[in-house]
Image (tube, rainbow, N blue to C red; front, side, top):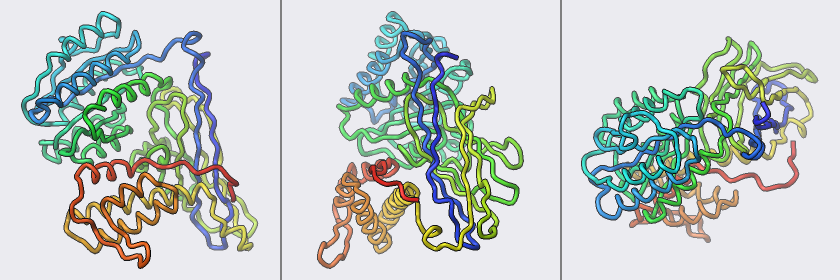
Length: 430
């Protein structure tokens, strides 16, 4: 196991609850050192599918940039990685290799794939679920590999909502997919569904000339993964309820509904594959109230590989009841920070939805509050984007929606709201 990464689990919380208190919050910071240098260890087995939207809306400059981006992704695959390139329209087809299997990356196969990519042309519709189902079929032949897909699209999904949902359900847990929306004609909510179902990211490529750089970055990240499919295993006591498990950094991802039961008190929550990185998770447990001075273990968290039951790291979430108001009212800084980040995301989502529905008052109130929260939490980038959608008078505090909002600015605000900022260094408190 010399090439296994090292994991650490650090828990931030204020364990003290007031008399009658029931809710325990904790932020779990999981860090991985990755593996030793590639010269001393065998690279992880990996399988990659590159999915390129080749629908009719991709004609002209877009298909040229997409070809360049896909070729860049292929170039970034390390030798030995199994891969395929898929073109997506109303249907999905493998453009390389020809026999609907994955092929190992080498100088020769990368060149052949790039030649095939160079012949891609744009026509037809958009059926994202079909593209993912084909990727799933291709990747399923490599169950022990770190399985990943990159998907890019510039248009709206033409599938029925039911068909799309069924495809996402079928692929969930089988591979991680990072997706990109190009231009301003796609719907962020659709790629958000892909990210949520497949534990990936989704991003906005404002300038199609930047597409190759986005593909390069995602491929590099995928190639750096060293451990496939780890789960966060959470035990809570018999009378307790696990209210939610959410990834809060680097992006927001609700894992609560992805639980698979280990036993009545324990569940596994998928975290996908890992390289050298750090992620943070927010756990909330509701416990029965206890007596003053009594302490319980409100949760026991382990990072495990479900197939082998190997434990990489573990830690305890505690609860202790006190009649000392100063102890029980102190909010842990990390808990407060990420609760605020989640609120900012919800305000932006609710505000943009209300704006689209013509509910001007609701949209104005939500987006103005989001603007205030972004400024308070040091999210200058988000505050700047909010300024393009809502105008707040600095003297009176009165807010109004801007009339002519660039669609690209709105999409950038929407997609960017799932990315969180890290807590600035300082005393932890609590």
